[in-house]
Amino acid sequence: MPSGTQALSPLEADLLLLHPPAVFDFRGRRDLYLPFMGTSGDVPITPLYEYFPVGFKTLQRFLGDRGHGVRLLNLASLLLRYPHLDVDRVIEALDVGLLGIDLHWMVHVQGSLAIAQRIKRLRPDLPIIFGGISATYFAAELIGTPDVDMVMVGYDTHEPMDRLLRALRAGQSPSEVPNLWWKDRDGSIRQNGFSHQPRTFGCGIDWSSQPEAPAIKGLPIREILTTQNAGCAHDCSWCGGSNQAFRRINHCDHGRAHKSIDEVSYELGTLSRRAHVGAHHLYTVGAYNQSDRQLGAFLDGLAKVAVRSVSIEQFYLPPDELLARLAAANQRCTITLSPLIHDVQVAKLAGRGVYTNDEMEAWIDRALAAGIHGVDIWYFVGMPEQTDRLVFETIDYCEHLLARFAGANVNPMICPMIPFLDPGSSAFESPDRFGYHVFFRSLEQHRRGAMRASIINRINYETKWLSREALINVGFEAVKRLMEAKASVGMLPRSHVKRHNEAIDDVLEFLPTVHAADCIELPAERERELERLGDEIGRRNEQVLFGGVANQAFLLRRQPAGRWFDELGWPIEALEASAPSDR
Ligand code: B12
Ligand code: SF4
Image (cartoon, rainbow, N blue to C red; front, side, top):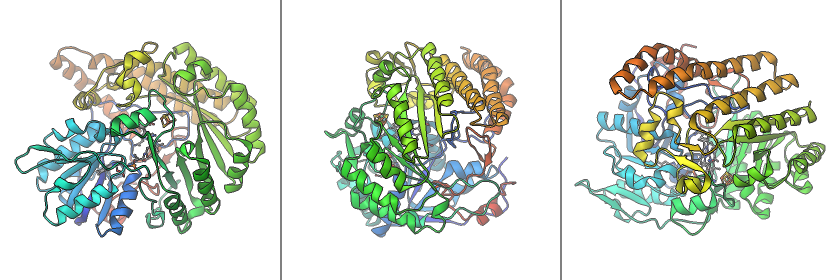
């Protein structure tokens, strides 16, 4: 399938940070069914999980300021946008001293390891380093794989990476670089300890240097993301970034770390220098972890940035004073709440349940009256003691919310927790205590699991109350019902909801066939049966990964360009000349 017309020019850097697609090589795969993932809301995501860790951007600035040439390459987005681009030609064009691959989210387990293997086969000269939350958790197993030369552990890798790049440049051994696992010349594994664990971490991102969105047809997605924390003040049992999980994964005695106020102010300041700042949405994540002083400084900075809209996550219901400040900071400020389950007692078991539904509704009235533009409310499927009945009761409650706030921007959303329960989370570590059963424990089990044809078999857990099959069936049915409810109150056009729900119906209809084939015991028979389904799987995957991004609520075909993580490595003209995107 891949065919190009021109070779790619060398991509030169001291360090290239590469973000893999969750599944390599997803293009043309007929043996792995990637179903449409509706989340009943406005989340432009694909089964490739295209976001790279925002720390790529901070590493680029921090290391760049210290004289290292750092480039970013979002391979997931590149391969999605250029379906005919030969990945081997991308690898051949790399002229880099060190190649970094993220295994931050576990969903990239297969993609990251497979691309490392491909690179090692074609370019044994390129040293490969892994980093990220999952790489930290699985460091010992990861460094044992033949294609990984180094693993940099921890939530803050700026200074260690500076030291590593300096050592490599000087031709010295990296034996003094903290947080590093590496292999010496004879292949034996060395571990330099885990001493770099600052409480103030990272640096501000320089958004002014972000490439502008190219002129494209259709709706560009102009989104910038900012987060000021690693770890968390809270302890949701299923979360791999919770206070306890953070301590566990990073082997430290603190459960979170913050960006300094100066660096946050710097970051917001750079946004103002962007040419079309007024066209951007600013997605601020994890703001609920800030102290009053930190949040105050953040809001002061926010008020000076004329972005089009802002969304901000809150754990508790923000008090009136904060509502007023948020509304003053941006005219289109959306607050994201995550009660997770409408039943407060059950929500408490998931780490939430800190307000009742009545309190939330009264608060929404106040928030809207205070000038808050909208409220997004997230519900989840796969929590302790959550039965199918409870899931559908949550949808009943969402219908009530939609009716009560009809005409206002109050948007309940629901999604199943798939495919993985976070490694390192309390529920992953002690599944029995929380009513979970975990199917894959090791890195290798996750890698193998991620290659199963059926998404049901790719899920790494089930609960006492919802089997893997039910997580999909109940989860997708719930999304469908919620979408119908949104059409009924006029929040979404009927035609969009019809297309969205037809896509889900197709998943629910086709998946049992794939699942049955994937569950056949005898490998030869299983392969034969999956081969028979190959065309049907391939056709459906193609529909989901058509070379653009499907907005999950409105199935608009949006081209992947202009988002903060659209780092395609080469100028668009060079890529078009090499492998036209056919659009
Ligand atoms: C902000 C956030 C998001 C943002 C995106 C942030 C981003 N792009 O970085 C959004 C909301 C989009 C998001 C989405 C998802 N998230 Co999230 N997210 C978080 C959150 C709240 C903070 C993480 C964070 O940014 N920490 C900051 C630090 C730690 O990371 P960083 O600065 O980016 O990177 C540094 C290091 O990690 C390291 N590093 C990272 N990569 C590499 C690579 C190399 C080579 C090197 C050397 C170093 C290195 O160096 C960087 C600089 O110091 C955590 C929860 C928490 N409290 O931690 C969950 C969390 C990370 N997310 C999680 C999950 C599961 C997801 C989703 C898969 C959910 C889903 N099913 O859709 C998606 C994946 C989206 C995608 N990839 O397309 C899990 C991950 C668990 C796991 N081990 O897999 C977490 C832990 C908890 C949770 N359940 O929400 N997430
Ligand atoms: S899910 Fe819970 S523990 Fe995890 S980051 Fe969010 S509030 Fe913190």
